[in-house]
Image (cartoon, rainbow, N blue to C red; front, side):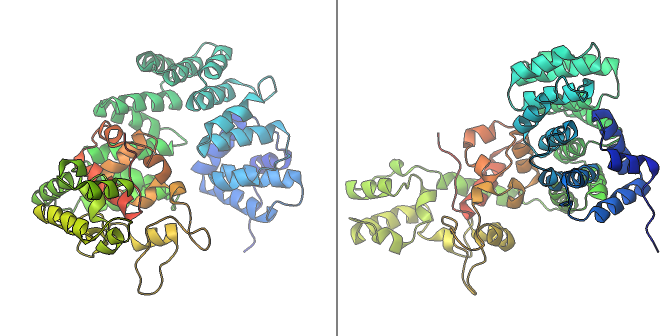
Length: 457
């Protein structure tokens, strides 16, 4: 059966590429809410092929990918030398969606004074500037907006970027009083309530956001996490399913759905958690608390071994291979560990209670460092410079497969990669809402499995 041609409105959009911020948003909403329009957009994209024929075709391809909510592909498809205002608008919106607020602010700033400038675009500029930490630019964009909900929202996010959270919250509330469906103001206000621990008020605001069209995916994710924090797993599951209806490959939603399904049938072993906490406290004991010979102490210091946890990761062979470390020092170390029920090489054994590579899935480890040799164990050192390995610092935090509460902390602290995580201290993580010792232990285990640690003070 032959595929139908795109509708007149979508065909006009594809042919003319004369959209502004509002018409682009309206077209994207139509694609997201109508299966027929979405199918038409997909067919138009297939007809374009790779979009490499000319600049206009490449821009058409990027525009259709944006409408179909495929931002990474869309951003890669915008021609580098495409100088139209529509190309600049796409670059800005896509940079904002893919986590590059500085790039978004740069793109939007180039559109000020053009026919693309309008309240929605200026609100985009204020958002991007605030999220990139440029309070002055956010304030400048807010000042250009006419009085109303958009201006109040822009003023609020500029204040928020300057650390004036109470004032920002008041601006968001004013914006919502003028426009009860202002999605951005609702979302930022929900986030403020969320971060301050006002869960019920945050849930109310997030519910109002997700009731709008098009639905804010981040609002659904945050709402799901709040439901999880409050043990409302069926409602969390519903949120994740809504995300996956539109994007079956959404990583966070897939992991979240798996977690809430498991949580509804989970047995919590409180005694096990208590025992593991005690063991973790022992492993964090500084080496300086023990009576060691000068030679042993100096050798351990030069090997950057500061705690019992650092020490049990070493084997006898590794210690003996170090200059000036002999059998006498080895026996001294083994005696100290025996007093605590520990032994050298624990982290490399299958039955290790902590720091076991088995705590991170084999697939995740292989993705980071390349598959191990047949029958061999993964190597947890520096990633290989050749082959299938990758820099673990660049790996998305979702790859660690953390528990609900630990991931919630990552979201609150805007930790997106393993590299972001290892720049944090234990104190910074523990200061996050609902992040306790058990979550910290979990994070430390995951990092230890990758040969990494949190930053020390």
